[in-house]
Amino acid sequence: MSAVQSALATLPISFPDPANVKIVDGSSGWPADVRRALDSGATAVVVLHPRPTEFADLLAAAAPVIVDSRWASNPVIDSAAPAFRAAESSRVECRVIVEPGSDFASALLDELMLIRALLGPVHQATVRYLSDHALYAEGSTDDGLAVDFSVVCTSAVPASATVRLLTSDGSVELTIPSGDTAQPARLITVGPDGAVLAPTLYETGHRAALRRLHGTAPADRLTDLRDLYDDVQVVLAAFRNNPRRRHEPDRVSTDSIDLTEGTQP
Amino acid sequence: MQSTLGVGFVGSGPVTQAIHLPTLARLTDDFTVRHVNDIDATLAGTVAARVGAAHSTSLAALLDDPLVDVVAVCSPHAFHAEHVIAACRAGKKAVLCEKPLAMSADEGAAIAAVSVDTGVPVLVGAMHTFDLGWRAATANWGDLPAASHTIRSSIVLPPNARFEDLATEVLARPAFPTVDVSDVQVRANMVHAGVMGLAIHDLPLIRSLLPRHDDLRVISASFVTPFGYRILMVVGGKVVELHAAMSQTWQPSWVLDAYADDLVLHTEFTPSYVHAGSAVSTLTTAESARVFGPSASNGYEAEWLELAAIVRGEDAPPDLDGVVDDLRFAVAVADAAADAVRAAVKAEAAA
Ligand SMILES: NC(=O)c1ccc[n+]([C@@H]2O[C@H](COP(=O)([O-])OP(=O)(O)OC[C@H]3O[C@@H](n4cnc5c(N)ncnc54)[C@H](O)[C@@H]3O)[C@@H](O)[C@H]2O)c1
Image (cartoon, rainbow over all chains, first blue to last red):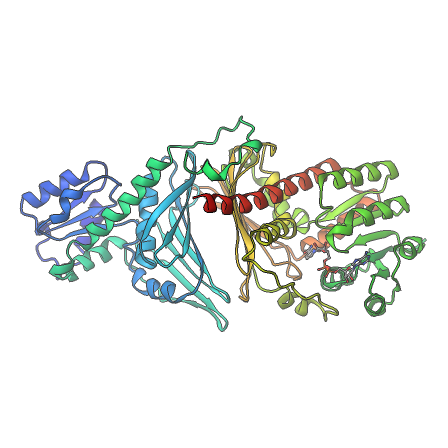
């Protein structure tokens, strides 16, 4: 919350009256907070790192609502999306590192929003593995690009998201740091002639999200919420279809491989 | 008695030419190449001439050569067990067998039995297991084997020729077979081959992080075009992702990561065939990172030096039970992954 507040202070010309922008923390119950902010006359609302939850009634909001997403708000997206979209491949990896104890549904939602920003929406995801420490899921974009999602918990290294797409003669790889600071993301495109590191941008995702809010045309003011809504449905369905299938370390299960039903119990 | 150990090669393909001969050229205090064997007489003769060694097309001739103290088995996988066993029975001082040791756990057990019977030590040329950058990490990783919960191996490789051609001047390179990957059986076989050919380098390292592997369960497996695999599995209470992709890229990336809640191991290996020093491992906690390597000596050098030390009695012979268990694990992963490729297609058809 305060991170967005302090980012607001770095845009004094765009937001001369920052009090008009309401910042809502995305922890559970955020839709009610957004509703309250809108009812109290906020000219714009920023939802910070929303957790997946139902919020259909907000889709008709009267003021712009911007989603400040953990990875997808990073300013690198503007240059990364064309690089990813230009690359030909049948598979992309999306891997994130988060703190132990993080909410996996939220982490998957953040990954879906990142892939949407880079390559387009994923309309269905299947959780392949879920434990207290990690999540693996699969999905695909409308273009049929398979997406391998993973979420791994550790506090040994800072949180980050990595998206890697391997082509027939190179790769596009993006690493987005935690977002707590303005540490830049790294976008590296490899082709037959060599590797290119895209110019680095020392701006937090919060500030980039606010710039986007400032530049949003009235017609697009709810695009963020609609996209979020779609991605939330994918996450909710993925978790509904796949109740926690924790691995039981003491169970010998070499004979229990059954992929015909194993992933959709 | 010779002052160096005489080496005889069974099979003189790209691995002998680009990996072992350049390595032994740096280890002339310990080794002299004495004999080069291949079913292709011209190839054996030409490669032998490069190092001033004798050559033959029959295994018996190599094994009968009194100048051959140690045998390096660099023939295709299917012959490894037969060739290793023959070298042991011939009473050689040691055998270095290229990975994989064999194609089944039974073959592996047979090799182990013969090695014990004859007293001839057998090493598997799985260079990552000898790599100083890896070994230093294992000596310092504390309770990572118990605490790690997630393991990832990812191998991205250009065509082998890119490296072979910079390591030596290769003769007689086998063509990559053209295969019909629209056939699920072919894809399953390719995934199997990928595990036994590529993942095999890191499966022993992964096994050293597992309390057990008899509970292996492959969650999903797929073939990656033009050649590779992606396998997700649960084993020893941990989730393991195996990934490999060979393409026309120039940029290799060979990493092994192991995650615990408060410790992460990240190891970067060089590609195969190159002579560019050891792996570099980093053990990271929230407070600091410790880096191991690079050492100038790579895993190929380390395996040969270990073999020399074993023959001289300075080092204990390898724990063959462990080596056979490595093979059992690799075969189980390859079989289960191939099954999963076939099962996924059946599931799709049923849906
Ligand atoms: N350690 C590594 O980095 C690494 C890398 C690649 C391959 N390898 C392993 O090394 C081994 C050899 O690889 P390669 O690429 O040189 O293989 P290859 O199949 O290209 O060459 C093997 C050679 O063995 C010969 N040969 C076939 N049958 C024989 C027999 N019965 N007796 C004697 N020679 C015979 C062939 O004519 C060929 O010249 C394989 O087991 C492979 O898995 C190791």
